[in-house]
Length: 397
Image 1 (cartoon, rainbow, N blue to C red):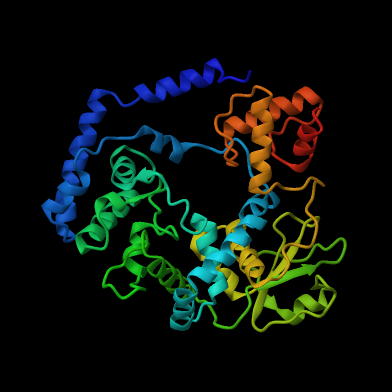
Image 2: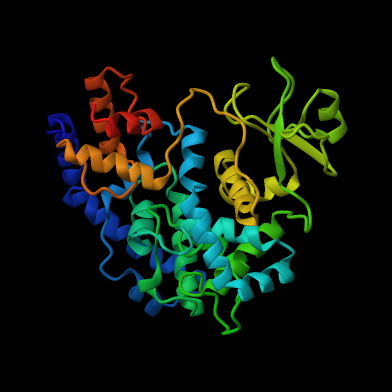
């Protein structure tokens, strides 16, 4: 049986006791003080009290803010989960169901429906995973328990209060991530105030229960980020062996310059596209490579990470019927889709590893169990849920 270590148990106990009575009093005073700040931003005392009544600090939010990932997810594992066959299949079904809203958003903002749907799929699995954290508590904790970003989260809390004051959402609908992102396409409250739009014509901006509002708002975000209607985000390319030239999203050059460096589309055809492009090599010289244009930058602005922007871009291609990544990734061990990750967990549970529910979400506990299993069978105990681990489990090793 795999159990939490004594050290891990002590850490959890210490966290539970960390917020002593004097600190709690300071927290309450901080929340009370924010009432005046909110009033200056147009939030009535009644709205403040309705949203913040009974809010207590949740130290798990601070742990999430301060935690350093024990395992860094390789780009190929990240994409294997976010652009798997289930995501593509579900996305096509949801695009058919909401074809009218997607077409209207595309016409209104000039962002193609496949990209809008891809953001929706990556952010909340098409509305299935909206987040479980109550934003008043999460943002109240981040605003009033001292941390390196208290001022930022204080502003996000004020924005959440203003959303309720406007009549867009009831307090009970303010649920999302521990950091405050919420809704079908996971807007931060300040982004919600700035860019959310009414897509269904009811006079409210509801990104939680209104799919048209969420899709139109996402299209508005991308349009404001510089999306170029009718242009491509980019495509996969082949880079000459031993390539050591420039790369990176920000290192833009004319397409002719990349052609001169011997770069071709993956199928060997000449490069195409107008405007400057960057050469993206997210796994280094031995992995898949992509030529990316301005629309890729718009997708990047949604989350600020190449792994995220690439997932959006590749999922949009898959939804159109185009192939996924055709090049190889380093390491020679395939990434696992969500169904395969769930299968790994099911095998581990049958072997007596106490990892909780087999849900396909690989967290620290599952990774420790994988590492222990790898150690037992003579594999490198890196805790990674890859194809070799799954094959070994299937073989009964």
